[in-house]
View 1: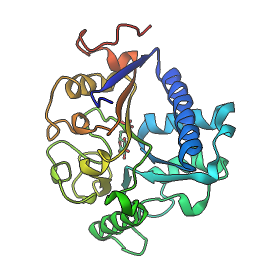
View 2: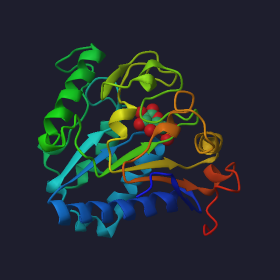
View 3: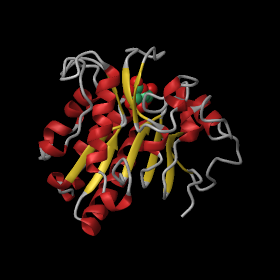
View 4: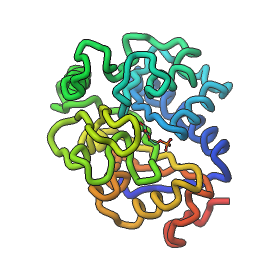
Length: 261
Ligand SMILES: O=C1O[C@H](COP(=O)(O)O)[C@@H](O)[C@H](O)[C@H]1O
């Protein structure tokens, strides 16, 4: 299967979130049917949380066996446990607190008041070790083969906490790194790197709203991943961009899917 990006453009952000939630339910159910369990990497941000809220409201959510789902995070704002700006706090509020997950399979990234204190690099290394321990030994991989890895696209083309030109987006060896001096608050973060992202079977990039239009156009028009990290986010089997019309409004006509309403 090709990893060239596939694009789906929805009418507006609410419809995009509902359609993405329906798609994710199907993907999880299929993975659980074929392999017994599923693994999903969550993203923070408005679009990621919108998807989780839509999933919480979807009647078909009960088709998912929540106890056989591993949840990981693509990035985290390095703040104390329970801080309202942490991605995991927002995910809990949007969905996780309302479904019967196995707490042992909810792999939140460390907080700044956790066992590593404020040492974000140690926190990143610990998460890398947790991922490596969950990877299938027969695959000789350093991260699990995630079924779906979600990424919100920032207006500056950042994905996870990989910001243009910062060292994290240049990382080619480690799977998780600490981020210092992010241009979007908070400045200290933990993030998966591009090699870890590219180990996922499917990578879905979410972009809704006019403020994402330029980023989508740049990332999908051949930009380099150092300057436009979203351009470097690919899945092994599939790379899917889910957009709404405002976010797709600056795409070159050659990219705009002809079948989109
Ligand atoms: O800070 C973050 O921002 C991005 C994008 O968020 P959005 O609100 O502009 O959609 C998000 O994907 C990332 O997980 C988060 O930490």
